[in-house]
Each structure stands twice: as C-alpha cells, then as structure tokens.
Length: 124
Image (cartoon, rainbow, N blue to C red; front, side, top):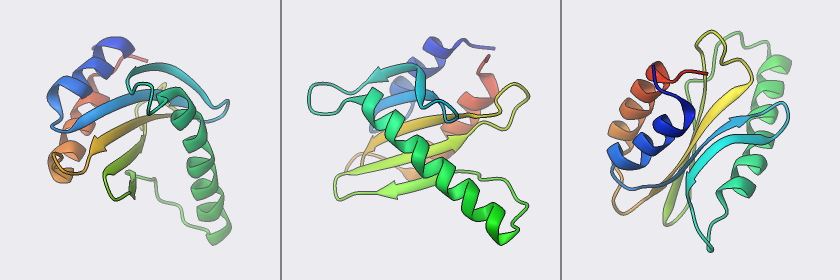
C-alpha cells in the first residue's frame, strides 16, 4: 500500500503525458493531495471544480435509477484529457483520483490501466 503523496507522484512518473494529479474529496471539494500543475494550471482549483462534475453525474444517475458505479469520467479538450476516477475500495467513499494528461503524449487506454493499478495500491 502506498500513501497519497507517493501514489500521486507515481501517477506523474508512470503515466505517459501526465502533467498533474490529485486525490479529491468530492463531498467537501478539498484536494487531499496534489502534484504537478503550475502557474498556467492550478491543480487545486481544477480539482475543486471537478467535484461539481462528479456530484452532478451521481445525482443524474440517481434520478435515472442507474444502480451502477462510475468507472471513470473523461473530459477531452483540444490539448488535454482530464480523467476522474471515483475510488471504489473500502475507505475511498467520497474520494476520486483526478488526472490531467497532455493529449499529444498520452495513451488513454494505458492511462486508465495505470490509474486502476495506482488506485489499488493507494492507502487512504
């Protein structure tokens, strides 16, 4: 099991094209840890803003009577991919991993695979 900081650093090191990552509590909007980003991309602001995306999707699923779990949410921009992965493990309720990828360098299939592995090793 890896702690939050180690897991987030592993996101940037092991996922091609990863530029920022965060572990976020979508009930409060607070990032519990983050790496990457910079003056042109505030990962803390992005993480907090994406809590609304997760809440909205969960609310819509509830209204529709969908009883499934979200594997991930993908937002594609012209130069970036934003991947949101709600944690499914015990103790991960209300948390999601947020990953920002450079669209020109990233392989989405591999990023999803790596993010699942990192989630499995994450100690919350």
